[in-house]
Image 1: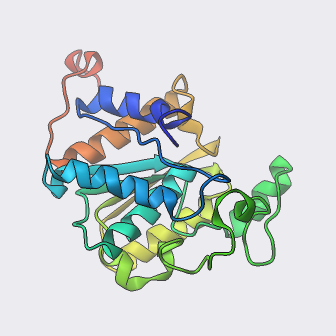
Image 2: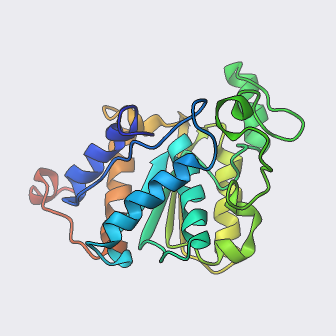
Length: 235
């Protein structure tokens, strides 16, 4: 999510747990702006970051729409011949912008949510941002390009068993693994979409620790000591 909406709910915990600088991007959104406006904005921030740090010490992550945008931004980096970051996190999102798959239908039955069109798109997606784009364009849905996925950095996926994106996430994870890319998938039982944005949940705190360890491992940074760790408990 954007810095002025949900983005800070993720950025602050990750920064606190890792000791890293985390930048929340205020990217352009629909319906005022259309694809690929957000990808262009993330790329502009990434270029600025590359002036200060090597790519292998930069990570990129987002949740929900921000998770979709993370995948789209990696595709945009490849298009612009930018070096890939050292790690990426697609949280509550996969590599298909349509959020398709079996879990979309099962969760619609449980949650009385919107059902997708026959092509897998949700009724509001075209109106809000995508317009008449081809959802199989790798710049929109990178899961459809093996050549693109083969360039992906180590990627962390976080989802839950009552999240509509579960099928989408598991398919994207499987594609990356099949191509020999490093991909970590963590699924929490009985929770829903973007559950970790409620930081009071024990499962959310666990998810943030997973994120922190993943980025620390891949971006070459040691985690700061925490009260829990210094007391001898597992962080």
